[in-house]
Picture 1 (cartoon, rainbow, N blue to C red):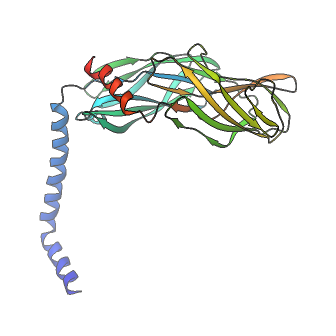
Picture 2 (picture 1 turned 135 degrees about the horizontal axis):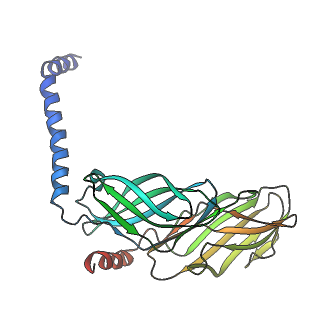
Length: 287
């Protein structure tokens, strides 16, 4: 008790001096980070080749992450003031976030997350982003094969039941979905936007209450019935990562509808050491 009392008395006596040193330490830390960032000559953002093939309903907001390499001594968060998207088809940016990642040979694998609102039905393209810096400079980064399909949600009956895959290190993904309506439906196909860039390989396994199948066409799904899906997707070798979200076309009461399922799977994470070396050499060494 006496020790606590002496500590309180001493703290009161020297509190301004203690606060002074705390402020000095904080200022020094900020100054060091600024000095460290200013010493870095490489302040470029090196975006990975990322394929985006997504779909959603009109007015939905979906998050799209874009990974990039950046020198680990450069504090981008201190320099950037705004981000804008370059698009066609009625997309809009509602929010953005800078997310730190792991370091590889003095470069950090970070990502910028874009919250994209789907404004129209039909195909829209996210062509790139415009980064605005606090000094007034602007820089544009363009992407290839980034497509978002806006759907009409006149009837939404197919929903994930219990599980889905958000991250996959390879081309495989698993999920389930159920018929949440009171009607029996017939499935026509499972597909992606821009089928010339991505497709479903022969490895498609679907389990229902009636057995296992290797194709979706013609499957009849009763109300509340759950389907387990294992699927392998195929893309071109030029992509480092790909973010895809499938849609299902089905018939109910003689009419054809399309529903999106899952929140999408980001394929290629975590990145293997050999793949990271290849990306580093391509973007940094051989730039």
